[in-house]
Length: 261
Ligand SMILES: N[C@@H](CCC(=O)N[C@@H](CS)C(=O)NCC(=O)O)C(=O)O
Image 1: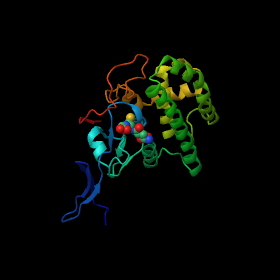
Image 2 (image 1 turned 90 degrees about the vertical axis):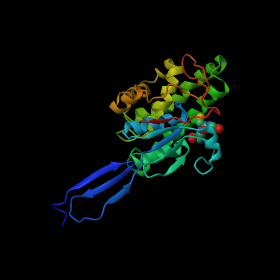
Image 3 (image 1 turned 90 degrees about the horizontal axis):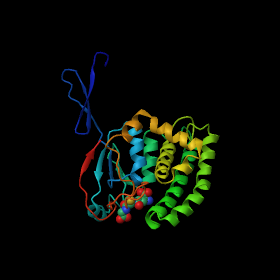
Image 4 (image 1 turned 135 degrees about the horizontal axis):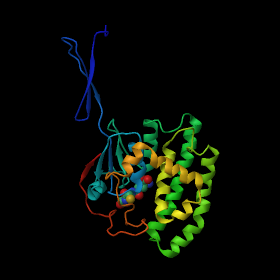
């Protein structure tokens, strides 16, 4: 019945239509697909792992810079009054960076190949979150003070050691299974943050350093890292570079720029 039928996809304004060349064919299948949208501040922060995953998978997405007042007023889309907020290609929206990362993992097959591997990915993601909480304290509460940095640097090797061990035990190429999962991107990001403030300590961990290099060398990721799509600001208070830059961005300022990938 369909042997002589030609099919053609046409994409317009986020709608994918499947058309045929059959005479009097009255139907058109419309598959509703929208470009994913990341709503976040114009900085890396908790948006960066999401961006890395999307670029790695070569997924086109739009980026909306958070309008702070609108976010606080919109309890449906931002139930906790915070971003990141992500809308997937089916129009489903959610908050909580780690929920978004797991949703991307399931959507784009970056969650390992079995129940056990999903759990192993979760172990790494939650451990990165523990580490991020420490980093956030250093950046926002201690404001990267010399005393804060000194104590942080003393403890950092013990924090990194379990990551190095897990990665080495799995062969060094990725944390779980034999190819990258979202866990590897989460670790890449937290390492990348630390390489800017304590590069010498990260360099003491060969497997982690090699993973960082391997992810940075992936063609899609490499293109993103050197593109102007990568935010230059790292944190909301602009600390986190070897040299601090000015201007607070994670504040009540309103942003309504729409950046398209
Ligand atoms: N647990 C949340 C934390 C989100 C979060 O801290 N978001 C900050 C972005 S830097 C925010 O929206 N801050 C604005 C506010 O709390 O008013 C997640 O992982 O997404």
